[in-house]
Length: 409
Ligand SMILES: *[C@@H]1O[C@H](CO)[C@@H](O)[C@H](O)[C@H]1NC(C)=O
Ligand SMILES: *[C@@H]1O[C@H](CO)[C@@H](O)[C@H](O)[C@H]1NC(C)=O
Ligand SMILES: *[C@@H]1O[C@H](CO)[C@@H](O)[C@H](O)[C@H]1NC(C)=O
Ligand SMILES: *[C@@H]1O[C@H](CO)[C@@H](O)[C@H](O)[C@H]1NC(C)=O
Image 1 (cartoon, rainbow, N blue to C red):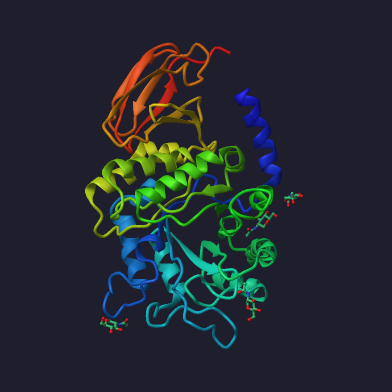
Image 2: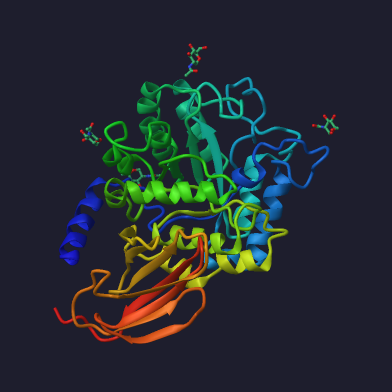
């Protein structure tokens, strides 16, 4: 049944999705916002202000510390890069003090390092942080400007616009980007401004115009915020899950791993959920000072492989136990799958005993499970085999599960 469902969705996905060919797997990279916000004080805080220096530093780290090889290849500037006014031709220009070389030169540098450059604009009277907005009459001009600068991705935010303007502007920008002839990945904040759910949000339309979209609130540097996002995605999975696929992704927002708000267990949980959800993996942290522990979580190859699975099927919650353990599942290519055991407990590690049958697996395969964090391997799992995982408070155990004997259909 799963197979039939896949073939059907694959068929329609071809007809209905945005056809720029980009982001066939979730995009990966780095973004300024969550960590560096709108820090424009380069006088007192030259290393941490939104500036070309920050972008160059991060681009260098992405290359030198192995991030690029793992797939983290976008370096994205969020709000606060602009000068306070458009120029005489009505064009957006970068703040001359903080981006003295201009965006084109920055893009050239980033490209020379084998990376891509993302930029930010806001459909509306001004950006969320009060910089020049992209009003409806400026959509084509701004698309043209970004293409001329050789930008590779645009996040279009939605502060200071009405829902009517958004309904016109987001599709218009999609057309305008296409008309430039440059391949530019398109991230739409539109649904986040409309509550993230139908009937206000038309996901069929979003799939046709955007490569990714922010469904829900901005993430913050705290476990409460990360958990709120995780829960919202699980609660609304029936609506959201079918909308994700190659070229068009739900975006639960940035990875805050490596900052101040998450414990070690919580950081592992965020990474595991983002892999499960086929989420874009945009880190927002300081790669110049990141700890070894955080780096190991973000560079976990098996988790990245799960996230980047070519089928691009978003995972979902399959069980909520009264023991406050949740089990989530994601189907992967080659009959593999990911199983995520998550503990909402706040007391002590829980020994959770279950079987694949209890988790709705069927058939006669024998499975091998790779624990993505401990790297332990469990062999010879049959449907009825009882097994136990030990899940820490606010923590996860995540398995990459492969059938070692073919499915007998
Ligand atoms: C630098 O810090 C001083 C003292 O806090 C402040 O008065 C000044 O405005 C800051 N400079 C900039 C460019 O924000
Ligand atoms: C945008 O600016 C126009 C002109 O000043 C104003 O009439 C309109 O209310 C503003 N829209 C929003 C959503 O702020
Ligand atoms: C523009 O859209 C068409 C299909 O509608 C697609 O074939 C083409 O690759 C797109 N070009 C760009 C630059 O996005
Ligand atoms: C949603 O968008 C699609 C594609 O643009 C359109 O065909 C459909 O009528 C829209 N649905 C609603 C409920 O507006």
